[in-house]
Image (spheres, rainbow, N blue to C red):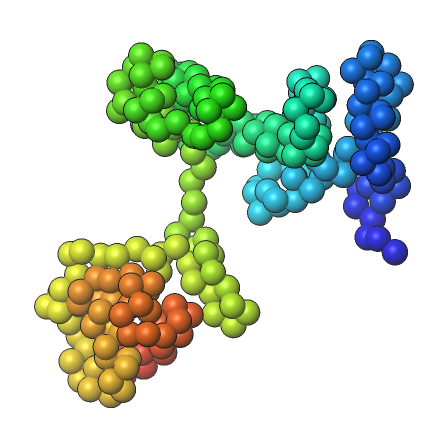
Length: 257
């Protein structure tokens, strides 16, 4: 039995599952102005909205709110879908639903963005969407700036301003036992042997490490390489680098405390 999911008062387990032929037939009726067919088509595609919402389930916003916003994207997709495109409706609708949810998340971002920057950003996103549809490729920042007739710097800053913030603890890889986070990908070009030893006073502690652990700490903290760069250089997985680095640091902490 499928797991019941209740969202916005909708029991998704009770939603109809239509065949492609049934979807096409309903769509034809919708395009002919059949309101009953439109309602049936909307209900039949609520699962699609839910599947998109679940991609954002790590966000703080309530699922019900994102589901409602996603439904707005679904309605826009229904109104704008061209049956002559030889394209599945779901293929067309998913980006529309995602776009609505992302706009909602940007508008509710805790970081305040000036009205002028937000205006440029939204115009840039509109240009990006229209450009992608027309040329089947995403425009560069320079191309967007040229179309909007604004400086490239303004476009870049505005798009950065409305992008979502990401925690340095956000996981980017997990093999079941080891988790690699964003902070593990950040290199430190200012790192040096002197300031590293000065910070944690580990001359004696380093002598207790095995050669592989010493090599990893040297590459990571003396030279400032990322775990991925270390992984490529010494020929082991990034997860192994992460584990060995953690073990070495734990050993050092026990020795100097």
